[in-house]
Image (cartoon, rainbow, N blue to C red; front, top):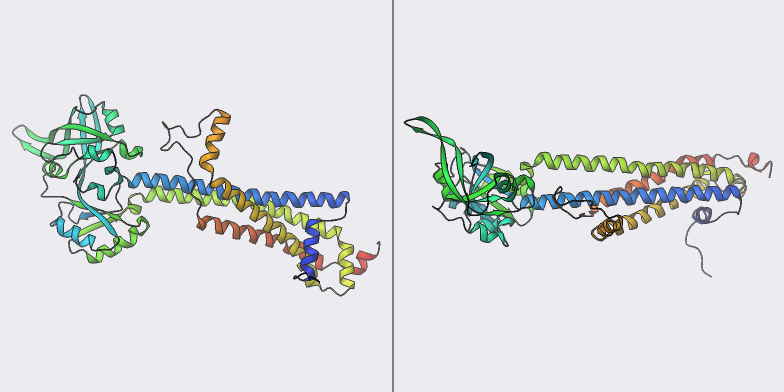
Length: 421
């Protein structure tokens, strides 16, 4: 004959959870218990969905940002040209996690077209090597960057920058460098006519509206440098950028300054992390409210089951056993609610890309207009580092909610409980 493998406390607690006498009072308690379970499930699901979408946005923005910004940048310690660019590249590529390296020059400049004047970040690049460190140099835009030929002083503009200046391919603009030159008429800014040979679209407005690219040799002539002022690196794992930067500090022989991509955009990533933390705290309140409902449910159950508790006590059940019965009942609600929330949350988070377009068609609206936001589809990136803490905290809250009602049940006096039965 099959024997139930659990203790009698677990069997009674499970029986209290799934059934009860068909009375109005017991039915109301079951309703409150179901509401508590539903509240825990919805709270857990909401947390998973929101944090997954925030992770997706962060990943999309980061990827678009890193299509323009390299994983690590090495600058000359004196702020001028590196003494030996080829040696620095060779030493950097000796690190097994470095998969690409390219020289560059970066400086501020003014771009003038008629009466329009825009500040820009001018970056001198080597078109032959740029694809090894930047995703923007791959695909169709690789042909545009190939038009940057040394000595011809061509320039490629970000799409938004070109639009704000009102220029297109084939137009000429004037570049004003911050370094001045002494002339018979006094000190004047250095100016150079540049030919616009194309535009690029990184998908990141900040860079598309401020970045202009020229050949590294032309940039060296404009800013009067002996060569490239730095080296850009690409890693096989972008999350190791900070560790690799620390290693390069010890292995590079030149006097250099090293900066990884997390430090370049520290404020933005810190803001995203604060938002994620606040959303986690706010949405966890939903689970906390459901846990408080669980307390009230168990308190009413204890009141309703006073006679049963008294009978169990007279049969020899200890106060600890009575506590276990109601801990099992409350924990079952918490476990089922948490598991249901995990399944619902993951189901929605993994299918956000299909659910949102369906809602947009149903409501005849667009949640992410392309002309306002960087991306026009809802991203989602569920991560175990978010999901596991959500499940653990939810279970802890559910178990904590059972402590007071269970303790109260263990204090029931059998004689008083059976007096009016």
